[in-house]
Amino acid sequence: METVIDVRSSGRPEIFDRANADGLFGRTRRLEQPLGQYLRAAETPRYLAHNDRSGVVAARGDNESLTPAGDYRAFLLATTVRVLFVVGDDDGDRTISLPYEDIVAVHCTSGFRTSTLEIVTVDEDRWAFECKGDLTPVRAFVDEATQIWTRTLTVLDRAESQVEAAAEALEATDLDTAATHITAAQEALDSGRDSVKALGEGATAAIGDRLQSAQTRIDTAQRRRHVKAAEKHRDAARYAWENRTYERAADAYERANVEYERALAVTAPEPSTEAITDARNAVEAEYTELLSAPVDAAQVAASAARATADPAERARHWEDALDRYRTAYELDWGRDRRFDGDRASLRQALADIAVELVDAHREAGRERREASDESERGAPATACEDAEAHFERAREVATELVPDRRDPSAGELAAPPEQGASIESAPNGR
Image (cartoon, rainbow, N blue to C red):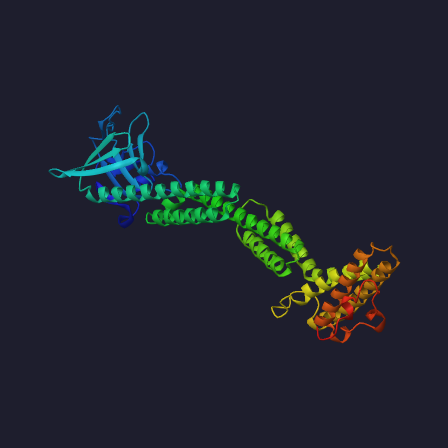
């Protein structure tokens, strides 16, 4: 067996599967357990070296040097996740495990027919392993693996820190800041995942739990951000609806629905899929109700006007109906025709309501004028002013919407002698 072996190119030595080896005088035991017994499930060996006598020397610190007993050997195994020393002994193999994240330096010196690999840890311990053969390739691999693991763990720390910052931003409902941190976290995690891939699937699997945990936290933060964004748009939609800015309400509902769909597209344990689905369905129901709201509200106002006997009060309801029908008519009917109704029917409704409104104001004006005739001298000014206001409003609506109704009837042209001509008696050219 060669003293330094590149496992990838030379294949798996038999020491991984059995503890004894063939020699001149039969089989000789080199370890108590096969070397493969000391490998973890996600660990892949890259280099193997051994010595018969020098073992592993603790060059600094309080650690004890380990030397093999009898015919046993000392093995150095460089894997995708650590450097492992295994030293055979009658009382059981002794091991030293040095994860790459704990290694800060690795050196190789060469002598006559031998070379020595020295590893320095974060605790300033130094471990030296000497063997016949060239340990330079082992040093190069350990150095590269150490850098990869250091870089990987550094960016993973950054990813986890960014997730924490995102969670804090979400608690403060600062969605833009949360999005920035989530993006930074995902970029850091992807960088770490790509970095450790250079050591092979075994290295990725060795850190798989931490990678998955970070990804789950990122996905949860992303899902929460989409849900909070949806809730924010839904609140904006309700506020716009309340203020009768229906286009803005519809746009906000559509954005809320998009955010809920995005949340459902992210696989994460929280918020639950059921809760998000229920919220999305509620938004869709509100959106559907909104699409008929402009015409429905206008029809309700018109019904209230028709059910009112008092002319002045009826005029007030017709004013509300006119305003609501005008709002419905002025919606963007050319953009996907989202809202219920059509411009032609709304245009006709506006004309019909305008006629009703003009008639209601004129009737209210006549009533107030008659009230001023019957009032005591000196007291009818207010009634007369009210009458003139109704007549003036009737003229404005007629001029704008029903010009053929602009001129008052003959009975409305007469004015009380003491009060002078009413506004309705003004010539048409005014």
